[in-house]
Length: 190
Length: 366
Image (cartoon, rainbow over all chains, first blue to last red; front, side):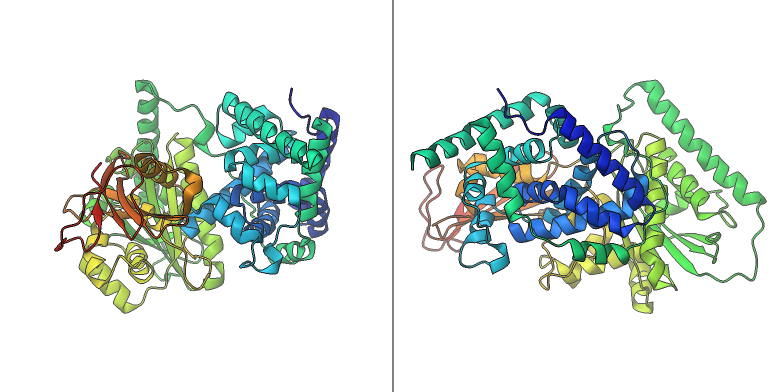
């Protein structure tokens, strides 16, 4: 029924690599940060973009997340779920970002600013499918999609990190998939 | 279809991900890693809700309180040491500590009556700051200034070595977090560096608060347009929890600079998102119809001690600006009006009288 994200084997391998890199980073190895960046940059960026709906903000949050990972790497206890730890760091930064802004801006408004003419060039989202995703999915749906499909986190892990019931995560995921399948179908028919 | 969808999604995000690896590495090279392993937050833990759980918490706090008295009475203090660092702790009690270069307490002063009650019979001279923090937090709990949850504490540091202020603040915050976590208590901590000049000290004394709380109040007056010089006394009398809520929801700085005050999530209040959702529901407005919105916590202007969220929002393709007030504790709308040319979407407006004291505002009672 669900779109399968990464296979279990792929996820476990990825998690093992992340934990090995975190161990190096904990010893102050900045080159290991670069390797971790290569491995999970899309995961971290996708989550920030799904929450903020703004490419420039997502870029800033992504960079801050890697710096925080470096800063707090010694505090990570290997449990086989490093993405949950990383996403928790990122989520705190995102909350802080919204607190500092002290506003709740319509995500559609942010999306419009992100790729309409009034935005700086670096904020422009070029990928047509991503534009549709940002337009049609709400924040919660985008959040679950990015964590499951891009980061390969299990629904149960997502529920735990976000502090939401598993049933809520599953229903949001289902709704998001249906909307995205419709987009794919429309693209085919166009 | 599913495989295609998965690949499309992964490809789309990958295509848009910017390359800032070198920036990240450069930034990391300038960051000092946090050496202290921090115990996981108590957030996920099962809370002690039974009588014996609470009793154990009280006993634990009482123990560190007594330990503070005992340890302080037997340790010697150098009479010639000079203060290198000042630490200000505020809940409602405001306490000022001066420390020597090895972070041992040289003096401990009460800045208000509540603090005198907390420090009664407590000898903290010669005690390491970590032990002093344990004792003070324990005493605050025992004397009822801290509860099991939804607490807020302001930690301010004034040090000769400005470069290390951030690191020392992190250390103190970790220590206080640890005390709360060990006792299954929750606390949101605000941390700030302080540069105390004579004028700030004078105002602090005048208002019966610590220098740290006074600086936070001064920052609020500077940065939040709803406050001015006349707000100083009112803000000084507010609890740290209330100031924390206001600070956490204040607008960003106009110059785009990052804030130098670290504020945590404030418990015991409805969230800003929920406050906005309440207004949208009352107005029968969909979230996607909103062009922009702003939610700021403020003290209610009705002589009562309530905190309210001032919710302001504007709809797309509409000049109407909706301004509502939501009680921060109950989440109920307590006042509201509409300004501008659009129509109120939920219910028919009363036509304005020619001499409408609201100056064109349509009152919306809910």
